[in-house]
Length: 312
Length: 297
Image (cartoon, rainbow over all chains, first blue to last red; front, side, top):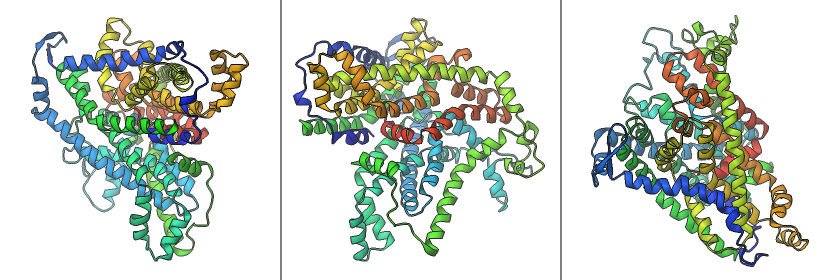
């Protein structure tokens, strides 16, 4: 997303090489509040978390000694934690594919109808709502009553029309994680759709016309013209979704609390660190999340530096 | 590029005569409307449910309440506001969100201004450092900062969440504003300088007023982020229900009244009202802000 803001302003940016001031030592005062807070809330905790990840703590959270790599071993051998990691991978693959995929398809569809703005708003509204509220909204979709009683959950009532037996969507280990992913997809598809739709509108009309002249059908147009033309945007959207989904917490915490086989890394981090005072394992989980985003961080900085050089 | 496209798409919606007409156009319109309705139904269901008496909420589907005889009531709202402290939680959310939006904007603007218009050793490296923090998950910070704030006796106070939201919001605020400031006309800044205006004065009278669009997007994004946040409130305020914001109170209601659907409906809807108003009133800025910032850690 970084790129979006950046690229909007890039065109009008003055070259930083020719500023109107010499060295301004008071600049340090201008950046001091921000830098001090960032050091306190990112750099100090990062170092502290790394240290904690090699230590063992008792139930009160007192450090009882160094344990080497044992906490790391535990994260990758304990079935509970492995289950959370496995679910996170399911989330990353499925939720990313569905949000970006649906966003792309719907963006292409709404591009051709007159009520585009209205439909876009309808899909974008969930972005304004907290994941906590979204989880409550979906309770009324997933609500379950034993077979035979009146279903007040929308999904089970709907399936009942076709004589399909009601399911307890959020407490059945076989599909609870998928039920949560659906909630997330409901929240984020509108976001993907709006960005992709903007990119689609940026494809020059001549390109579309030329493809039509050459006899490109709708499917060819989609895969051979539209998707490649908006490739960079898709890259940004996919990265954004991967980063967000990696840290998925609210939806899981509010809907199932991580029970019924729905645990994820961020929820286990919360449980281990803040409920069990197991700082060692909690810290390893936080480090795991941070290491996973390192490639994105490097890409962001490289892109930023390249752009700065261009400006000079 | 992407942003120019975005601006074009959201602000200069122009009909290019590409709308499908005829039979296939109608089919497409119906399909697209169906998708829109499908997306709206869950929220609409909660809205209807929140006005239904509690005996009916769990015995009949909310859709049956749409046909007469109607039994709509506001007693769910009365109950959560008076007995479950949602009224207080709403006020708490405001107390948390307003400084939680303004402080990071102000500190971010100071830093961004220095990064954009002052020359000092290490400037670029520090700025790249801030950009790097954009995507860092807040989980890395929660544990040690919680311990530190606890030892200072600050957990469970508004101050803890203000400072946390400020810190977590800063990388994006600095990033967004620095790019905007850097794009301000150089001549204007120079002439202000030549006229003898101090840097401080130039910042307040020229840079900030010219940056209202960026500030508005940032304000809405940060406000929505803080208002809708659960994790930061859960960690730093977890033990103190008196200062809990609406998200945390709703999440706690789920814990205590797992089946108390009538209370949950009204509570959840209360938590959504303000973001929805912001969304409808300032959709353009909202979309811009949220698109610009969703990669934040």
